[in-house]
Length: 115
Length: 111
Image (cartoon, rainbow over all chains, first blue to last red; front, top):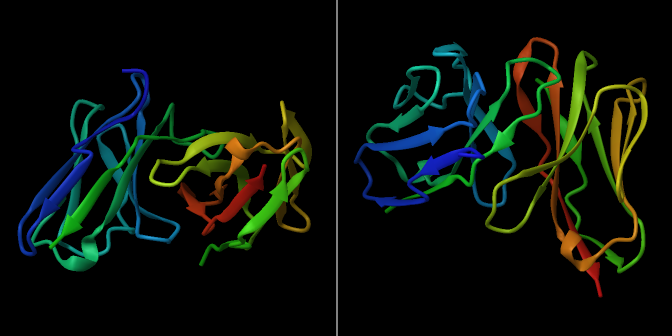
C-alpha cells in the first residue's frame, strides 16, 4: 500500500488477555518504529527495527511487551497479560532507512482499550 | 534525558493571521527536527523537517532552526480554520534513532 497500515484499528479486551498489534510499513522502508500515545499525552517511543533486528528495546515499558519483525516488512507488537494502564493508541511509523535525517511516516494507529 | 518542550496552548489566532509555534530541546547533539500535525483522533502527519540553521519555507509553512539557542519554530502564514490541530515538535539525533516528541501545542484558527 501507499502508507503505513496498522490493524486492528480498534481493540477492546479484558485485563489479563494477550493482544497482538500488526504494522505493515511503506513498501521499501527498512526502518520501523513503535510508539504509544496515551490520552492527552505526547508520543512515547517503544522500539525500533532496522531490518529484522531491534537494536534498541529500551522503550518497552515492561517484559510483558515484545515485538518482532519478519522478512524486513510486517511487524507485530505483543502485549501479554494486559493491564488497564496499557490502554493507549499504539502508533507504528516507518522510514526509508535508520538515520537522523530520515522522516518517519505514521500509520493510523491501533486504539487499545483494556477493560 | 532528552527533552523537547512546547507550550501546550491552546493557541488561538484569527483566520488569515500568522500562527507561531515554538519548541526547545535539551540535547545539543540533536541533528534533525520535524513538525507533525495531528488532528483529533488521527495519527501524526509530517508537515515540515529542517536540518540546518536558518529558515525553510514550504507553501504557507516556515520552519526556523537555531541550534545555538536549541530552538525550533513553525510559522503558519494566512492561517485557515483547517489548520486547527495539535502540532507536535520532534527531534532526532545523537545516539538515538527514535524521535523524541514534545507534548504538542493545540492551535485553533478562528473564522
